[in-house]
Image (tube, rainbow, N blue to C red):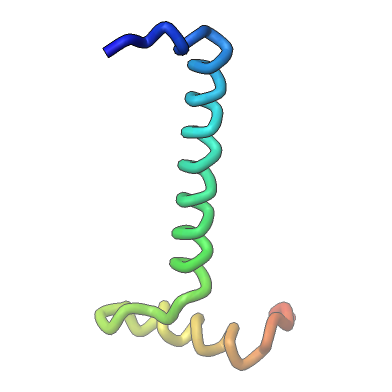
Length: 62
């Protein structure tokens, strides 16, 4: 297999594209984890906090 096309510029571009794709996938997963429902085995304190923030619709605690 000939890799003559793989100049330093092409190699750098492949690395940068790979990093960008990885960051996008991680951001999508993080957003899904943060905005999704709590798992069934979540502690009661976490469940209460989750429900209070959902009921407030983004209102800050006083």
